[in-house]
Image (cartoon, rainbow, N blue to C red; front, side, top):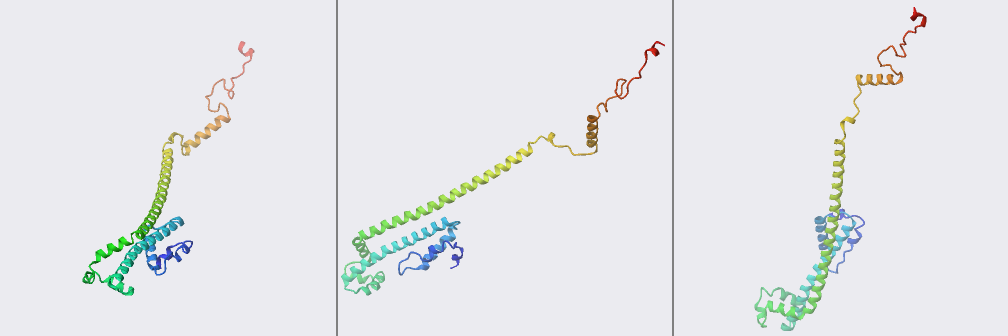
Length: 232
């Protein structure tokens, strides 16, 4: 089967021997499983196991519904055998033709609908047991669906939150970049700036290099005059 190639190896042992009764169709079980795989697309081991559990529940629900029909037909067979003395192995053929040959039952004062109603009443207690089992199976299958939906909703919530955190972080980073004061940005180096730096460094090394010349400048001392020259 093609869908088997999509199933993880760890899951295969859980479906190779499906819980079927003798005479039940394995093909029907796999057809249902394949349809559910295509519909739900499980993404991890937990979802695969839940899907298999749901498939088994659905298979049991189908079995129990068939059982209800079988119990009613079985009772009709007993009634027909008693009324018309028809052998059991021939009753199935007669029951299948009741709608096409209504005159057959009229000879016994009954019709097909009353025969079904009579059988239903006679086996009501058995049908009630089947109905309770059907309700239990339907609740279980609903629970599986709820768990799957809750798990995926939680995953979706986490994914949305993670995406929002990433977007917010990117926004904050961009906002900080745009808010930086352009005056603090280092001015590109050029000849004028380089000369300013050279002059500034020279002034710091040789004090008074850039100060205007004066008579009091240490590098240009005033001429020394002697007292004799002054008096003369």
